[in-house]
Amino acid sequence: MLYAIISDIHANLDAFEVVLDAIDARGVDQTVCLGDVVGYNPNPNECADILREREIPTICGNHDAVACGREDPLGFNPVAQRAAEWTRDTLREDNRAWLRELPDSRVFSDFFAAHGSPGDRDRYLFSWQDILPHVPVLESHDLSLCFFGHTHSAGIFTPNGMDELDETGAFTVDEGKVVFINPGSVGQPRDGDPRAAFGFFDSDTGRFEQVRLEYPIENTAERIAACGLPEFLADRLFLGR
Image (cartoon, rainbow, N blue to C red; front, top):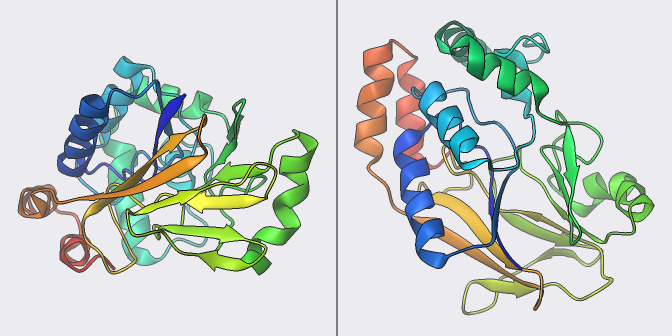
C-alpha cells in the first residue's frame, strides 16, 4: 500500500496545493495527516476544508487543539499566540467542530501516527534519546514504525541515531526494526530548506521517500501581511527556519 505522509500544513494553502498535486499525480492509496492543519499562516478554513472533503485521516496537533478550544496556548511564544488567536477567530464553526473531534493519534496496520510523541502532541522529538521512552507505546500495538511531526524538521531516527537518506532520497525500513520518521512540514519548514516537505511510504517494500517541493512563498507572504499577522511569519518561510 502506498501512503502519502503529510504534517504541519499550518494553513499554508499555496504549499498544500502543490503537495496535493504531487500526491494526486503519484496515485497513492491513502494520505495521512499528522496534525497542525492550522496556525501561523492565512488559510485555515481552506486547508481544513480540503482535508475534510478528501476524507484524509488527520490527527489533532497542538495548534489545532488551541484553535478549536480544546487547549489554552500555554507555552506559545507571543507570535504563535497572536496567530493562534487570529486563527481561532477566523475558523468557521464547522471547522472548529471538526478539529475538536480529531483523535490524538491513529493506529494503522503498518505504522503508528502521532503529532508530537505517541502519547503527547506537545512533546518534541529531536533525538533517539527523546524517542526512547515512547517506544513501548508502539510495542503495545505490535508495531515498530512511527510517523510523527511537530518539530517541522524532517528526520529518520533509529537506535543507531539519526539515519541518512540514500542517493535517491529514500530510506528502507527494515521489518521489525524500530524506526521513527518525521516527514517535515508542508507549510512551515524549520530545517533550513524552505520547500514544502512530506513523504511517500510503500508498506509493501518498506521504502520511505522524502519529497521537497518549491511553492510560491511570495503569495503566502502577501496573504500573511494582508491578514495583519506578524511579519516574522512571512519572513521565516523564505528561510525555512
